[in-house]
Image (cartoon, rainbow, N blue to C red; front, side):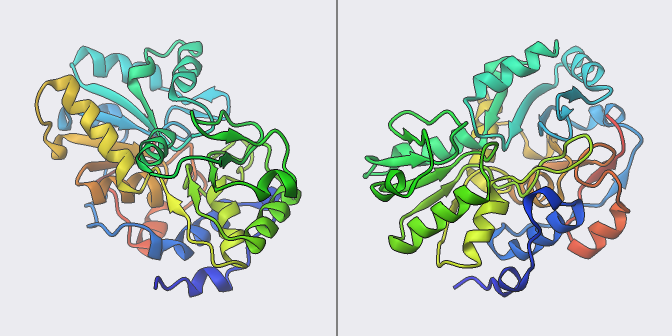
Length: 315
């Protein structure tokens, strides 16, 4: 059985008090559930733009690389234009799972970024691929009231004990509308009748301009401290999302793409970088906008042992 003693002894903050430090502590407590990977060389460059000759394809994280909140990150337009000019394929691989990937693409298009639905893959897509392979797909409930439930899965119009009691299993795809009261109802429902739980977003938090959100991994960690729930995880750093992204790149290239020529670009060591390394990709950590924007990044790398191949402050 996986050793989660660190999680059991960790004091979690209330959702409105999540900081980068508390998020890093929770990621480390969940570390036994994450893949193992080599350490990268942690080479330094000023911009991702300066590294493009190293790569034939880029896999970009969303929050922390393309945008923070509802604002795009400086330089993303130039990066995408230069990648296109050099015939470098670009995909977005996001752990945002609340809604279909097409809606993420529309968001990017609304910011005048040249990304369409074929350029975006999400942890939601990985969860759906798993769900469709299950033999028993009847009666599952997507939890948060503001998510779009996948096909053949019920939505929770309101969270109540009676609404959850008859569910076969649960999928937590997002937590935009989730609060402590919902968490109590969910935990009590599991306490009464333990059922499978799929986590469609393994992020602890997402960077906002002046704060950090509480994402599904934070909420399920709270449940894991009290109950013997063993969630199944989808999205970075877990492999299925990377398989979907890699297969898309190979299909577009019409041939296998050398993984050492693909860069996973992200702001989180425990999701983007660890997952990319474990899948055999090169990795680039962007440091100025996301989770580590106010941190001594080299110190965090040393403490976690998760080192990217490259570290850049800007795009």
